[in-house]
Structure formats: C-alpha cells, structure tokens
Amino acid sequence: MAESLVLADADVVLARARAGDMVALERLYRAYEAPVYNLARRICRTVEDAEDVLQETFFEICRSIHQYRGEGSLWGWVRSIAASKALMRLRRNKYRDTDELDDEYHGPVLGKHEHGGLRMDLEAALERLPEVSRAVVWLHDVEGYTHEEIAGMMGKTVSFSKSQLARAHTRLRGWLGGEGALA
Amino acid sequence: MTGHLTTAQLLACREPGLEPGVVAARAHLDACTECQAELQRLDQVKARLKALPTLRPARDNWALVQQRVRAERRARWRTRIVAGSMAFAAGVALMLMVRTQLRQDAGQATAIHEAMQRSSQLEQVIQQYNPDTRMVDGQSQLVAGQLEDRIAVVDRELERAQLLAAREREDALLRLWRQRVGLLDALVDVHLTRAQAVGF
Image (tube, rainbow over all chains, first blue to last red; front, top):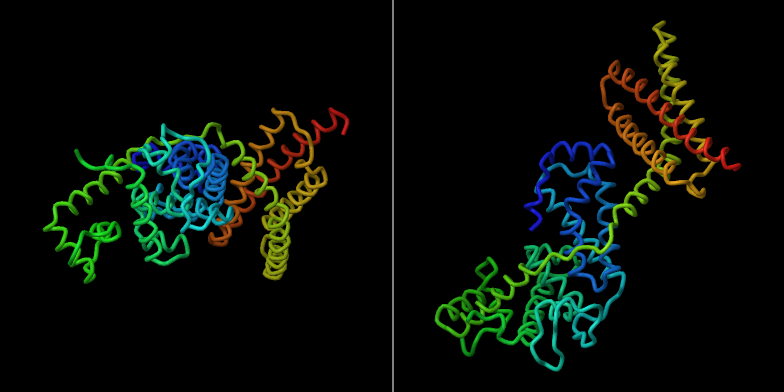
C-alpha cells in the first residue's frame, strides 16, 4: 500500500533527515502518517492508542533514522517500527486473554453491523476480533508478514501465530456468513 | 483423508513448505470442490481486508512528535555535550602539549578549545534559564526551535568530524564549534531578550 508513497527526492530527504533536519523529518512524517496510523488503528482498540502509536513510531524514526542504511524499502523499515510499537501497546494494555472471544463491542463502529448472529460488515467483524487475533490477521493477510516474522515480533511461537490466524478466520466466517465466497 | 479440511489446514495450503500434513491437505484440496470453494472464500476475505479504506488520524500529530524530539535533543545536550566537551577538552589539551613539544603552531587547537569553552558557557546560561519551564510566545518558540534544530545538525556533523583525518578534522571542528557558538548565542538572545522584556 505505502510502497507507492515514493518521495520524489527521497535520497535528498533521507540524507537531510539523517542529519537531523526537522523539515526533512516532517516530510517523512507526511509521507507515512496515513499508513502508519492505519496499521496502528487496525491493531489497537482505540483511536487514542493508535495516535499514541503513531507518535511513538515517528519519535523513534526521528531518533534512529541515521540507522536506516537503505537495506530494504523505507516503508518496510517504518512499518516494522510501527508494528512493533502497536504490539507493545497491546501488551502494555494487557488486553483480555486471546482465547476469549470479546463479545462486548468496544469503540466506534466503522461501518454498519448487526447483532444477534446476523451478518456484520467486514469492518465491524474485524473490530470484534480479540486484539491479538486481529493483529495477526492484519499483519499476515494485509501487511504480508510471515508467521515467522509475526512470531518474532510477538515473542510467541510460529504455531501460535498460525492458530491465531485460523481462529480469527473461523470467527470471521461465522460473523460474515457466506459473504466472502465468490458468487 | 476423511472429511473436509479445517480452516487451519486450508490456510496451511497457502503457506510455502512441504510438511507431510500439508502435502496430504493439498492432495485433498485438489479433489474436493467444497474445500476449493472454502479456500476461495478465505482468499476473498483476505482480498477484502486489503481493500478496506485507509484510516487517517483526526488531528495532526506532528507538532507533538516534534516537541518530543526537541525536548530529547535538549536533554541530550545537557548530558552528552557537557561530558563530550570535557573529554574533548582533555584531548585538545593533550594535543596542545604535544604540539608545544614539537614546536608546532598550536593556534588552531587553541581556537577550537576557546570555541568549546564558549559553547559550554552558553549551554550553562541556557540551562540556568531552563526554557522548558518557561512560558514562551509563539514566535520565540518557533525561532528557538529552529535554532535548536540547527544546533542538533551541527552536533551530528561534529560527531562525523571526529572520524576525519587530522588536518581536515581540525578545520572542520573549528568551523563547527564556531558555528555552534553562533547558534547558541542567538538562542540565548531569543530566550533572555524576551525574558528581560517581560520582566523575568
């Protein structure tokens, strides 16, 4: 998604950012603000948590941009910081046991949804997943991380990541009904 | 294999690898239209997840990030630069001694030493004033922030200059320390001139 966000003068901006230039750092912020926030918001439960993750991610980027050596894409580097901060936020908040289905709906509904086992839209179903399951689904299915990478970031096993993904899809299947199937 | 594949088995079919269980699941998948349909449904959910709209923050968070970065830079000056200055001053003193012994021109090393001392004095003036705890008007804050950013850039260059060859290093250090003194002078002006104007 954010790979398309290529700064026209990326090399110059990066060189200036590495030297601590605030204008260049702000340009990096503007380029990656939306995808970082999106990742954080999809993983974290609340808008406030997502904004904190956004700030912490860019604070870290400003501090350590000189360590980015251009190995791999800049977005890949930025995203790994954002994912790590979002997962740290989950751990810090000590959200509920991942085996427990979160039946209570928290936070704003992003799209229309229906209660009582009727079909929900995907946004609502995603929000309803337990935090860790949702994080695994997002990191694996959308951001493209492997189970090995997710396990490493979460400090868990590969099997844990795989089972969280399977459970999440089973739940989504139940909530979405046959909506996902091809016609 | 009896019965249909579980969600976990279907997802495993999409992963690379040839574990025995996955091989058997793939063989079943090839022959079972129901499991193929279910896997397509899973793929469809994944595609729909990727197509969800990008959520954007309701407010601009850059100002808060910038504030934290600047506060950290200030904190870093107070520790690292003072310690670094002392260590470097010791180095310059040693260099001066060596140069004296060798009867070489110590003018440049002395100039660096003087610039460092002046820089340290100005740091102390700012530290005593403690701008973090003061109310500052928008314009002064903007100018002070810009000066702090430029000082941070000079600090980075100073770190790099240490890695240069001897003669080149001294030229760079003198230039950068003088530049730093100029910026700190300006920063002191911003803080103290304004403070005096409002009677601090």
